[in-house]
Length: 268
Image (cartoon, rainbow, N blue to C red; front, side, top):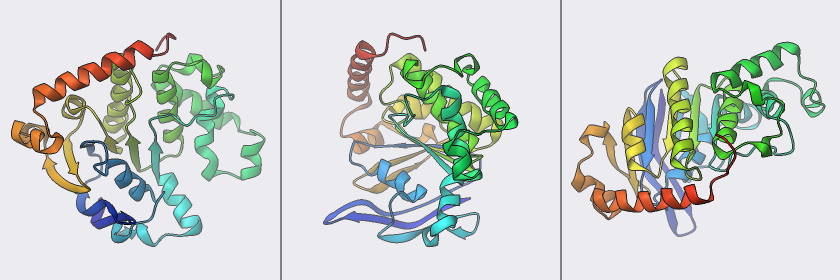
């Protein structure tokens, strides 16, 4: 179980995350929603320890994550894999090598630098890519893929870390609706098949409702809703977003249309 206990992060006079306390059972898929600036991304970065909390604690399986340093902290970041909105792939490298980079904390730096991966490791990477229908693209450069494909490569790389927890920070925000669905289907698949706990920041309310077992809504750094999607009422949505669901749907439609108009012409 992941436990956040009074978790707080301040940047000068701004409190980005304000005394957040949550208990997340193993194997749950949680959607974190809220307006821009609500503290969603900061919360995930705190959990991954990319930034340190100002106050509060993070506990996973009884271990105090906020106290970790050095190798123990690096091991936590391996156990707590993270994928980002902008994929963070090495564009000039092929897909297979990008996925194999997920093994960096499991092997020597020298072997990784010279891309000296074993046949067994390469076979595992191919099998992981095949789960997301990308084995055929293994030898392509990452920059030849569409956005949806690149995000699935990033998920495959994260799985190579053999994590116990997966954090996804706005994983479909830069994708058109079709590719967004493919990526969310992939996250849901590993949540169901691997029993992997997934925390996913989402800017689309309908997506959170459709894919997530639980929704956590944030406003001004605080949790203002925590429950199953069916319990998120229209009045709560207005309180969270400052607009009705109808107005929110219209705004999301405009955003999706804009993204689709500039999406990569390459096949998803």
